[in-house]
Image (cartoon, rainbow, N blue to C red; front, top):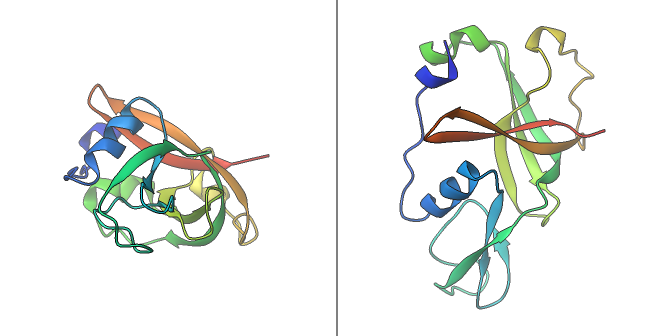
Length: 143
């Protein structure tokens, strides 16, 4: 199935600015204006100081694999042709407690061996334009 036919996320009040930035190929994280703590995913209240004010700041777009799965089950018919599908949990270099999910690109799933994805594997964000209205953030190995 093509990327255009995939299910899409629905931006909400908190995530809409992030999706708009991704469309421009910018990776942003929220920053609390009260204490300066960076956070992702977007939320209306800071976990550290409870401030309700925030802005968006650029992310380095780099990180390291914290955890991952290689999905071998077809849970969504729209993704059947992509199984096995490696899905990463990436700890961003912007902070110890900032994580983003995404799939690994630049690799073919059939080439993944047990040692290809490892904890602390350096990765970088890449942007995939699905169509004129939607862009995905994915991850590739950083060399």
